Image (tube, rainbow, N blue to C red):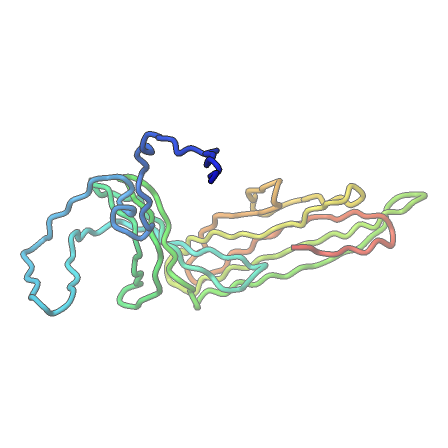
Length: 239
């Protein structure tokens, strides 16, 4: 009997093994948090870890660093003041990243995640809300019309910010506000003045001040801007 011949139309080829690839590690592993540095620490004292009694936390480094504390306020968003600490690492060695527990005195204020910190690197820590400092924001609007034939409506906005200091020491404060931006060529927004002078970001309209509020006193900041638009136009605000 006749048996048809099997035709092979596919082949299995030989290929060299793939090249070495760097292993992917979870971001919370010590090797990842070390940022590629070979870090080693010697515990300040001899510790005993009993067998069969679970894990134990052992301090590896104890240092005191200088810290500068300031308040950051955003009166257009909230009246509260946010306490932040600004530090610059004086340590001689690299510190790995990881989760940090934050305290003001003996009071816990939360946790944060730190990245790898090299000597001399500045960084900021959030320390929660300072309930004793509450800002105020007031807006005064003046409307007028300009032009002979096709009149434009011009609104002048005077914004007053007040930052109190209930403490008996000077209060370093970073204040942030914003003037509106126009996405229409027919609408013109112009910053007229800031008192005291503010740093302005033309792209975002952000205004910022660094002030020192006197003990038991108050700092007042004012900025004025105008909005010019065709008559009878209605303005809307977008995020």
